[in-house]
Length: 104
Image (cartoon, rainbow, N blue to C red; front, side):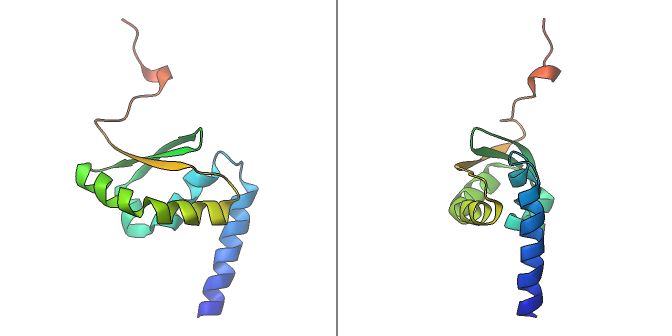
């Protein structure tokens, strides 16, 4: 079973490395954090080395921040992309994209 798992990880890693560098962390997030966390979070964007992830509440921010070093290690080891930091934000902390802001 371990052999199959290693083979599958290599296939996924190779596929991710073919994606544009700026998209790799977004695509890899569910694999890195696992299905349970992925179901409760949403990647917002990746810019300037920072992966922004929306979480349900402040408690999730605290818990996932403690796991961030592990997530960073896995992302950088498997993607060939440099993620410097993961920023966990709640829905009320995130800002809408510029194109959707209304000008008054």
